[in-house]
Image 1 (cartoon, helix red, strand yellow):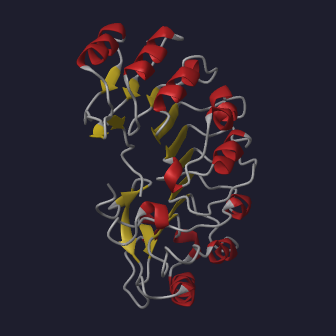
Image 2 (tube, rainbow, N blue to C red):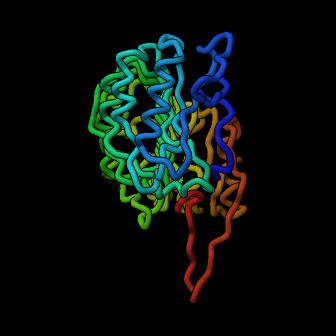
Image 3 (cartoon, rainbow, N blue to C red):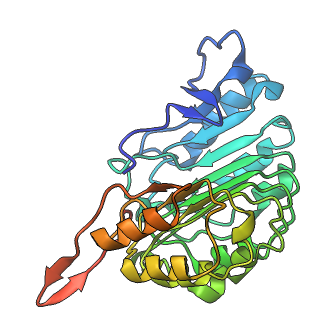
Length: 309
C-alpha cells in the first residue's frame, strides 16, 4: 500500500510546485504538491512554501498536497507554516498532509503534531486527509465546512478518535478512521469510538470507515447497534482482522439492507460466512476481495491488519 503518490486529489490533477516554474493557464485547476528531499530540513520546506505564496496567486490555491517535508520520520510536519498561509489562502478547500510512499517512509514513522489549528484558520476547508499517526494530536472542534475527513494510519491514537467523536461537524459526509495496530500506537477501543458511532454531532454522515483494525470483530459488535448506522450509505470495516464472529455480529444486529455498499476487503472470513453475507444482503454491494489466511506460529494464529508499520 502507498506505492505511488496521488495523481489527483479533490477532483484535481496534482502538480508539484517548483520555484520559478511556468504556471498553468488556470492555476486554480490543480492540486499543488509541496515536497522537498528527505535529507532537507523544515527550513527548505519553509522556503518552498514561501516561494509558492509569492508566485502562485493566493486565490488560485484551492487544494494542497504536502509530501516529504524533510526527515518526516524525525521532525513533525511544520503545520505552523500552513497556518500562517491561511491569511492568504482563503480559497483553500482541500488539504492532504503527508502523501508519502512506503519507500519514502513507513506510515507509522510519519510524525505529526497538533493539527487542530488548521481547522481553526481554514473555516471553508471541505476535505482534510492525514496520513500517519505518530504524535498526532487533535482537540475537539466545531467546523461547519468540512465534508470529508480521512485518517490513514497504521496506529491512530485513541485521543484523536475521541476528538473526532466530540467534534461538531454538521456538514461531514465522509469519515475514515484507519485504527491500525496496538504495536504501532493504535490504542483506540470501543469506548473511544462512542461519539462517532452515536453520530449525534455528525448529522450529515453517509460514509463511515472504521477500518484497518485489529479489533474488527469487536467493532462489528458495536456497529451492529450503533445509532449512526441507519443513515449510512457506505459502511467500511475493511483492511482489518475481520472474521466469522464479526460477520455474525453484523448480521444479527440492526438491519443493513439500506446500505448501498459494505466494504469488507482484506478479511479472514470462511466461505460459509461470505455466502451468508451475500444471501442476507442481496441488494447491497459487498466487497469481499483480498481474503486472508491467519499466520500460524507455535500453534497460535495471528491476523494482521493491511497497514501497520
